[in-house]
Image (cartoon, rainbow, N blue to C red):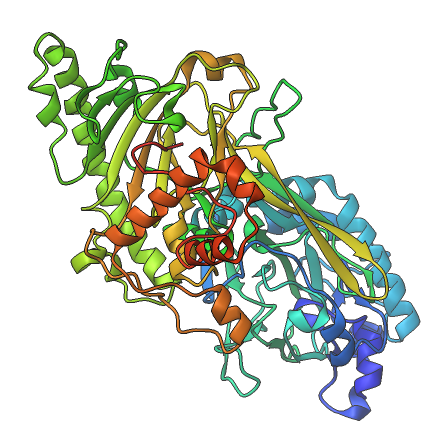
Length: 636
């Protein structure tokens, strides 16, 4: 019976993984209509997803699986109501079926029956006709696409972030006549659907027979019915949660549609389970304009998307070392008020203004200011005589913006702590209040050359850094790892890295990058984001300005890894971090950096054991390849 069910179910998707009658004797018995007409015994459906026969657990285990940025957490079952006047799926479906006597007949969706499909051959012919009819129906397709792109996809994007939402198109239409067979319990993940796909199921006819969904990811979980009617959609995580449809014991036909949506960061549009013979067609919705293409020959653009959900952004940062988020505050007034004439360093170099070349090589082509979070911005402005009016205007704008960013950062750090499996308040307490110990920089690009690196590649010596760009220009480049796929008997991956320009998002959006501290204290599990500034557009030379916040612990904070050591001895040695204060680590790291700069050529020639031992000491504090400059000298 199981073998026969697999053949009849075509590998199966959604509520028809394999169609099974209530008893072996009933498997091929068809219900009778008026005048003895034979109705379909099985659930007739369009858009069939088919696997090769014999795809078992062992073969699935060998499949490399989809390559996704993030793993979608279990999505709780919920309901979405929609306006039938705006999205008349029921009406479009009836107008499609009523003119197709080759598929079935009836005076309404509730009375529509699929005639002459009592055997497998006839059933499959009807299924082909229905699939072609649904795919070719302009009215149903138009209503469905508008519904997804105007309503459902934006809801999903707001919840999970990302630039794209993928969706199945056309949807799957299912017709279960009175007396039609049950569909056994299954999870769509068993049939090649990705974890990142979310199921949407709605009836188009008034029928009491509905879909039943497990409450947990467990074969012994309790099943509950989707309490839906025409105009309501049941949303559930069908790739993980088992679900089934009982035999249609009513006297009316169940006509329903279902489909899947997938938020971009959690879905691989190129992946297919090995052995998939037929798959659903998909479209996508893009929610942010594509990044501007760089006009010169060195400007490949990163594929970065803005995350609306901070929990999602925190997980992305942990996975990739970089995340992009919307801010509740706008930096425009700060950039507009930044004094135009900063010809000399004014005030404390670590709490005031500096000219280009005023704070080391990382500022050779930048001028601006550095302010400590534990000191008011206006301290310097009130003491500068002739420039006090201009400086005070800037100080007021920056003070307001800084408060907003600090409040936002505290909220984001709660999600980051949870993503790292730490207490939610970890970055708010004692020496690890990284907001109170942070720095804020506002700097503009000056005297740079188009195409040349203006700020050398580096990793920030912070836990995380938050960068906000001006309204007209960017120029930030991130080191992006690319993987090339080579298929032999086994799938292998070769990695290479290159700098790519970040899309320009503007003064209400922040790029958050992982610093060397987060990289080390997570035993290198969180990748540190190496970056640089290189103007590749004329606008970068004219208008590039950015505000950067470096979030770091108090000087007395003891640096201890957040995670216990790995069981692998080699991994433990590689991820070793000496326990010392942040002030000690910072002094050692900066001294090493400046020593490397001044003795670069000599160090290359030094191959003694003593030099190797010195390098090992540095590795215990920072990643091997990274130069760690002072926070006052860097900033994207």
